[in-house]
Image: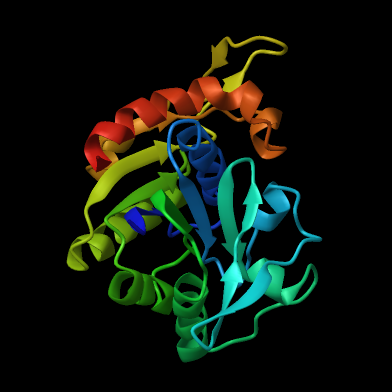
Length: 239
C-alpha cells in the first residue's frame, strides 16, 4: 500500500506556527488514520522537540544492501526529522543542492510502512526546498498557515502563487494566532478588527486558531476542539 496521500504544511513566513499546526493536525488525523510526519524544515527542525523525543535516534537497518531509517513512533505517529540526525544544538550549514538532497533522502530512506497520510513540515520561504519537495516528493496537496500580520499575508500570497505554478493543489489556509481567549474561558477576544484573509489571499480559511498556551506547549487534549473542526473541513477535500 505504501503512502496513500502526502500533505505539505507550508508558510512563506517564519514564526506563524506552521510546525505546531502540523503536529496538532497530524495528531488529530492519527485518531482515525495511519499517519507520519516528515520534518523537512532542515534549517530549523522542531517536530522532535514538539513531541518531546529529542533524545531519541531512529534505528538504522539494512534492506537489500541499503541502509534506511526506522521512524520514531510517538503518539501513534511515524516521525523522522533532520533534528534526530543533527542533534539538539547543531545547525545545518548547507547550500541549496545539499539541502535538496537531504530532504529527498530523508523521505526516501525512511521505512514509513503503510500510511494513509504523510504530513511534510516544510521550511519557511519559497526557495530550493519547495522545488525539491514539488519535484521529488510530489505532495498531493498543500495547506498554508498564516496569521493576521500584514507581512505574513503578503508572504502567503507569494506562497500561493508558487504552489499554483508548481501545480500542487492548495487545500486552503489556517489563520493561526487569530484571536485571544478570555482568561480561564473559551470566550474569544478580537484585539483588532480581523483581516478578511479569504479576500486578501484568495483562498478558503479552513480554521481560525486562537493564541493560547496549550497550543504552544503542545497539549492536544486541550486544543483538539479547534483541530477537530479543521480535520472535518480538510478530510473531504483530500480523500
